[in-house]
Length: 252
Image (cartoon, rainbow, N blue to C red; front, side):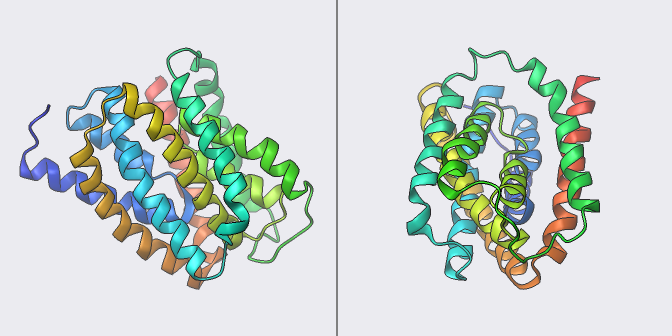
């Protein structure tokens, strides 16, 4: 058990608030909280597990906030959420058994591609567009694939959900964001269940950070609901780029 001083504890709470705000709009909250948790002295396994604890609060709050504004019907999405949760748990269980070095090399390129897509593709707004996959096919293929990645590695999962909803499900940017948060919550919860068995999360710290995540997520979801794509697109481009640069820096 590590001993956190007041200054480090406040840093963790502030990071969780910022992560909740950013994650509710564009994903990438783990980019903020995970390094700070490791800075606090947690082992990588503990940091991943504790990050899932606090992340569940933020993603769940954002999903409920979007649902309250009529942007996602939780009852019609429970099947997709279950698939995301199961896939997230499977990814977390296999985190030490599957080599992920190759994926980590490719991930920055994919994230930069996502940033360029949202930055320069014309016509990306809050209006729905042509659907390329039926809801059932999307739920059975895209959802568990990204959910598994979320449990296995995590960073960028929100951006991947987003681009899937926009390009394949035909959702507008704001609607895609709302549905992304529900699936993010589910895959986070599934991953947490698996990490809780092996990763020994710091529950009290995770819950305290979760309270800050709730406040940040409520603010972020409220702003995104009002402003829509004009806020979501630039923040998504920024978080994807920063996450890609951080992953590159870690490999150098």
